[in-house]
Image (cartoon, rainbow, N blue to C red; front, side):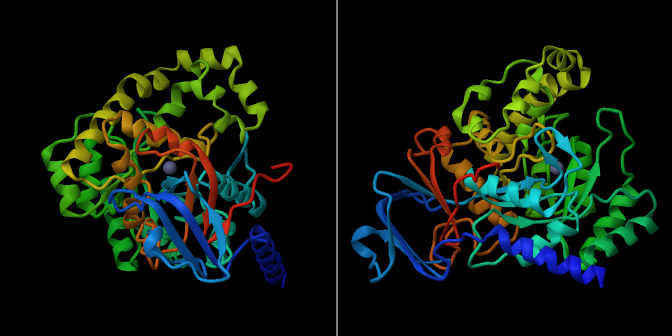
Length: 431
Ligand SMILES: [Zn+2]
């Protein structure tokens, strides 16, 4: 009885997440924009996209696309349209400002609307997902959704025996997660690392249950070993050594994607002084000023400067991650844009734009980075109907004032965000 009541309330509050959805089943025509479709093809200038029932039904140059009578026309002349951005590695629910332990539907909804306003229309939450996140994932309405689409992995599996590992995999599998997630990392010697026997058992059982396995690794040796054991997704950069031919061949041979999460490293040290983004309006629009003033406290900054771990991530791990990203991208390994945003001080929505900017600084082209955050990420997550602005795909569209192929930082010039043809509403009072 209690459980049914709780379920009914949950369904109601999830329905409310999209209460103000826009066009839904109607037809929307985006008219006159410069369209970067996410496939890597050259932009279509003065293009038109038509969506009906949330899906793209036509796209092309204005002269060749017929706009149905009665369509809601959105004038995007002079703007650039890109597919909704996909964060292949994020986290949701656990944080509000600098507070933790705030996990509930309301906070999940708040974060999914936040991601959406930043143009991040899909987030793959890789761990710490509770009942409420599964419920949102299950209930999100494909046609009326106007907040970020959510994928979930459940709790990070932290087994110490094979028996325990199997029990965990089977338990989570009952809820049909999009991924399973493990960590194989001793956190610079601070924790014990999962043994090969355990992750091999998890990988085998994940395969039996038909669920892809995402692994958090730090070292090249562990990335190779987990890959050999059956990992399906490498959730962070290799940060201890330069990637080699053996690793590249293994990644390509198994068609496994790699998520750099460069901004995860940034978050470990950047608050040792005033980050440049503390003066970026795109950041300030969404962040609680209390968070900024706390992160500015001199003692807090000093502690980060004095932290050997923070300095290791800054001076060793991040530079290594950056050179490895360029090597892997050049070698043709699939790079799925991901940030590990969600934990405290890893700012959801903003960090994805920072990540894309850093990926270009690492040596990828703006087009490669846009693909990494759209079509490639979609492919890596098995999302067949997302990631490009092509017929048949969901109409997840980010309208930008400026062209990101000219400067990747132009992804920050977000004018409008649409999910399944629904306009994402502005920030509500009190959010
Ligand atoms: Zn993570």
